[in-house]
Image (cartoon, rainbow, N blue to C red):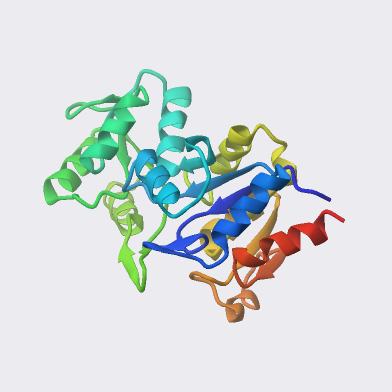
Length: 260
């Protein structure tokens, strides 16, 4: 059955760092030609939507900003809709902090109701220490995503996962996490496309975020082997992907088969 829409991971799936995955542009051209709704999902909250839009456009992808949903945007919407009026201490790069403010979040440096932790490449001891004290004084800990590592062209960088673990351990707090593998991210992505979530497909290279989100959402999944996961990992997976392909270059062929 033809899917109602596609949720497509970015890092490791359509590019790695500054390098495009071969066949990714042709895959997107196919989706546009076939009028298959899609949205790119990224847990990486160290950059703004404009950054990702400009990056994808410079790589030759014929997309609009509406084709991109970051964990930052999803988290800001969650706070605006479900924590309305609350003051937020934002741990983020300056441009991401400004994006969060522009999305209607009341960003404060004192007496917050929420500590919002993003992938902050400018993080300092002072930021961590202030977050710790705010949480100990009753602020809720919300994080954009749970990733321990962020893929680069040829390696990985430390992500925010360990900072979440540290603050949770020190404050005996369970955080609210919005990005993949949270069901919230899948629901927002389906909403962005205006489609039935239950008939969407998640496409990505990571088991504990992309594939787990598909499992949490009860939707089909396609694991690509162009990024983190290897074919040997599939045998050990608790939640088996619905399909496994080498890269998104193979996606048009698979979608034709699925849609027959």
